[in-house]
Amino acid sequence: MNRFNGKRQSANPFLLYLCATWKVAVSMSLLTATSAWSQPVPGSLDADWNEGASDCKATPQAPLQIHAYEPQTFILRQSPCADFEANFLYLLIGSDKALLIDTGAVADPKEMPLAKTILELLPDKDQKKLPLLVAHTHRHMDHRAGDPQFASLPSVQIVPIDFDGVRAFYGFTDWPNGIAHLDLGGRTVDVIPTPGHNQTHVAFYDNRTGILFSGDFLMPGRLLIDDAAAYRESALRVVDFLKTRPLSYILGGHIELNAAGHAYRFGSHYHPDEHRLELTREDLAALPAAFENFNGFYARHPNYILTNPIRNLVALAIIAVAALIFIVWGVRRLLRCRRRR
Ligand SMILES: [Zn+2]
Ligand SMILES: [Zn+2]
Image 1: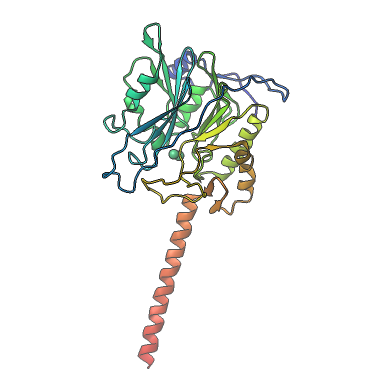
Image 2: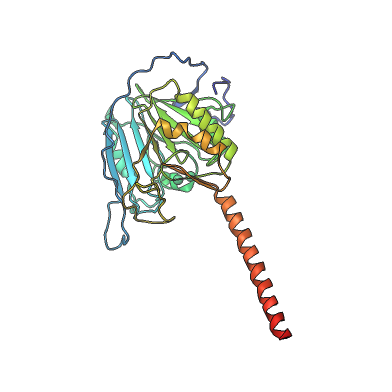
């Protein structure tokens, strides 16, 4: 995991500027098992997340729920009524800069005043708002639809969403190996490549709280597999990365299961009795084996579901064609029998 190459990959001067500005660095050191890590700052996950409604028009909802995990870490949840994806976004505040992880599924600031809300949460420094870096766990639209709200704001930088741009911004030269670091001032966030759900996927490990922000890589929901081999290797790399580090919680991008582990209907705006948001080291530790035993289509585990949507669609299409052939064959046979009679 810790094979590093000190050279930056991109020749794009703008991206190099961004990297330099944000002091992104790929670690050059091997971390030993005896490394001492400071105790994570404790926080609270005691929140009743908005469960949406079966009739959103009849029961208007606040579009965004804000929960302070601790004074410098905010969890924002988009209402399931604003968009069925109901994304979780995370704001991490350092002494020099702040980091927003994902911008959610809703673009329109009238429907989802995300940038306004984030600016209100940002503290001042030198009579100005703290500079903000907007990053994404991956490029799926439900994790970046809010980007345009930040595009013209001063002191805000947005990490590119394309594969080359992501690697260049963080300085990964041997993707998916290596760890990048974001220095927020008194708070470092490690960026870990986690492709498999999507080619551009990264997870963020916050050294202050000991939380892994895992996006769609690991969450109480459907882990949609794009590349199973890459996904499994990502799981192994994250397990290895966290072996020597404290881990408070794993917080993902969505909750798609109820407390009993059953998935809500895809597209549902109503999430009664939701599964808890946080997953644990045990859930992560079980992920590589879950891939080893995966049947390639669908597998339920206590706190997540592995599924390959493309393969399932192909299988469904094959079953539908087979059923059609069988029906046509049956009808022809029936007609033949009638004619004989
Ligand atoms: Zn996704
Ligand atoms: Zn997502």
